Length: 191
Image 1 (tube, rainbow, N blue to C red):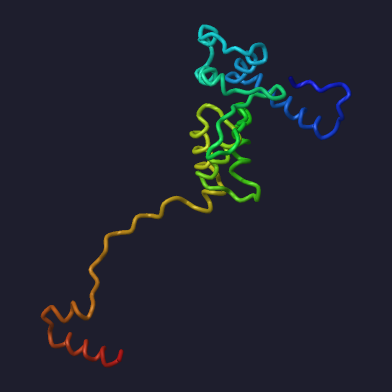
Image 2: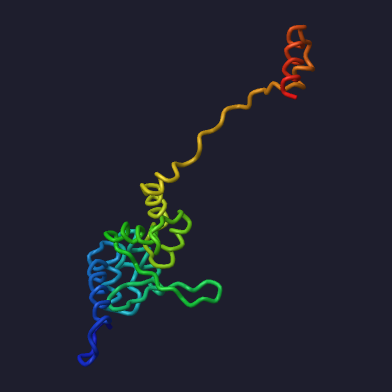
């Protein structure tokens, strides 16, 4: 599937295949993705449940999505339906050793600015998939030093409102002669 014909031109295409081969190796060595990738390389039919019983919970979850898994140049992807009439999306099945780096690239964006949590979720969902990805993105965004130094969380809660003394409140209460004279003197100064 991933082999190049002998007379095919070399160049940029070969560089992308080399990058794909390294991702394929990372997927092969991953404890959750590796068994599913090896089965998909050997057979087109979904393995029997008895064969998957000994695998991890994440591998079983990937196995349950067997019909949406696609193999391209030895790399495993998940194909999802496009939303609102858009074409189907290929999501890379990201190995555990690359997840933090993958989230980091999605979080920083093209311009180098740090995206908000929801925007990072959207970018990861467009490009990659693994079991528990939402939880990992939430943890990453909570631990991002740049984001946390910019916005330190919720502001402290304000205290209870205190009664405010105004001219009206002073006029309502019984006053001593000295207070009244002081008020009149102040009002003459203010006006």
